[in-house]
Amino acid sequence: MAELVPRVMVMNAAGLDLGRKIAEALQVPLEGRAGRVEADRSFPNALDHIRDCFAANQPVIAVCAAGIMIRAVAPLLNDKRQEPPVIAVADDGTVVPLLGGHRGANRLARDVAAAIDGRAVITTAGDAALGLALDEPPAGWRLANPQAARNVMARLLSGDGATVGGDEAAKAGWLNGLPKGSGIEITATMDPIEPPPDGLLFHPIRATLGVGCSRNCPPEELSALVHKMLDEAELAPAAIAAIGTVDVKADEPAVLALATELDLPLRLFSPQELEAETPNLMNPSDVVFAEIGCHGVSEAAALALTGDNGGLWYAKEKTAHATAAIGISPQLITTLTGRRRGRVSLVGIGPGQSAWRTPEASQLIAQADELVGYGFYIDLLGPLAAGKPRQDFPLGGEEARCRYALEQAGQGRDIALICSGDAGIYAMGALVYELLSRGPEASGVSDAARRVEVVTAPGISALQAAAARSGAPLGHDFCAISLSDLLTPVEDIRTRLRAAAEGDFVIAFYNPVSKRRRTLLAEAKDILLQHRPDDTPVLLARSLGRPDEALTYRRLAELDVDDVDMMTVVLVGSSKTQALHRGDGTAMFTPRGYARRIDGDLAKVGQ
Picture 1 (cartoon, helix red, strand yellow):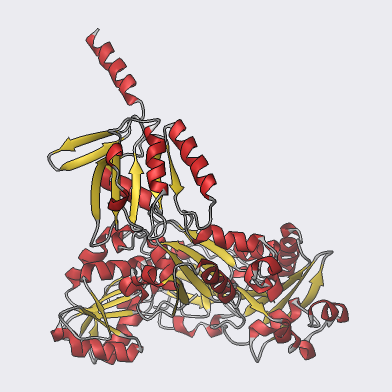
Picture 2 (cartoon, rainbow, N blue to C red; picture 1 turned 30 degrees about the horizontal axis):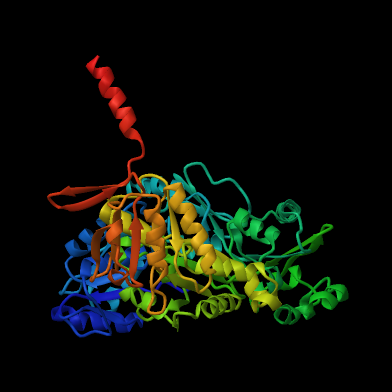
């Protein structure tokens, strides 16, 4: 996935020079409030933009009053361990990390202050007094018991001292500045030991794990083999940088389950990349070479992950269906070789406005290496899409955009396939899975693309948005019918219309008309009038959630095709749906049957 780079913002011309210095130092574009300042990118509303970036898990640095940033993100605050850095920069160069101290905000604030000759005001107790946060170790280290860090920091601030021991203590120079004493025990080791009582246990990340297996290897078999090796090596899983294997195993259930179990990243290598490690293998295999084009998988992957100076720690061990090997590096491993498993994120953005977009959708968009979709939908993302590589496809290019997204993900990239509304409702979700369900020749999708991860972020669909705007028309059973005959035979549509009419469903009509297609909505009206009253409420909801949003109410008998276009969703009530006229407008609602219960309760009260 794409690295989440900081977003640097200014609100007015007074902060422009300072913002430029920060953006240039961090090598990112400068973003400015539209109409107030000329910057590399613009945003229309500061509060909304800061909130969008925070929801997307992106670090935010703004030259503005701290209060602006606090008001923007306050509704989203939940878990300090998950919050991205939020940093306010005053006009005099004072840099204040407001949030995200546990996720790099303090380090980032110091970098910003150095770039502008300013002063970082660090308020988190550990960083302020000790110069480091024990729950945020530097790259190449993992803390085994983060839940204990708060208590240890409190004791250090209260005057207790610490001893740093363990067989890897020499590599933990970043701990040398702690107050010395015997009260707190801090251990640095690769061993799988229990953390010291009331102390901390840090693992240096110097080991690697290579695995291989036959297709459909039982996950428990691979897991048992790996745990046996870890026990033999006396190695903590937290000291392992990553799990490596050959790229054809990108979707192997046993490998994916192991990565999840050990909570380690998975990295993939081509057979050619693994073959380059053959001179260093302890158990090269001609059989493996004949099958996939390299002389070993587990040993070669473990070596490839260690880098240039690494070697094998434990040679290949195997079971009936699995192999595993452990590599070791003399240095801390802070960057990973190999490729990630590619991912296609099916992202529903609702009508487009940020207030109706889920934080999960915003995060997947921010993490993506590239955005793919109908150009108008990507444009609706506004500043969130700014600077992102994108591939626009026209209407009618649905198969092409899905194939493109899958093939790019097959190269190890993170692709967000942008859909309006919900990705699984008349959008690209079903087509992606349909392509994956066919063979390569029938779908035009390569084997590499078929091994990618596919995730879905739900969005607000047009029927939900229309219902919310109009009251509660979906209060009882409802259905959705697309009136487009591009992919569905007309007679199938008519069959569904008749069934929905006879079943007395509230109906949401998608794709009701087009320039070419004008008759099916009129037919639907005639069919429905055979089963429900002339005065059945109908809502025509156009451009929901967008500046030109329009709601129009009609009686079913008065529904006119000329009042509808492709940007309209049509909600037709059931025979029970009612229109309620109130001082602030008209509402539609479909009773669920509570009236009988209410009447019964009132009757009991009157007795």
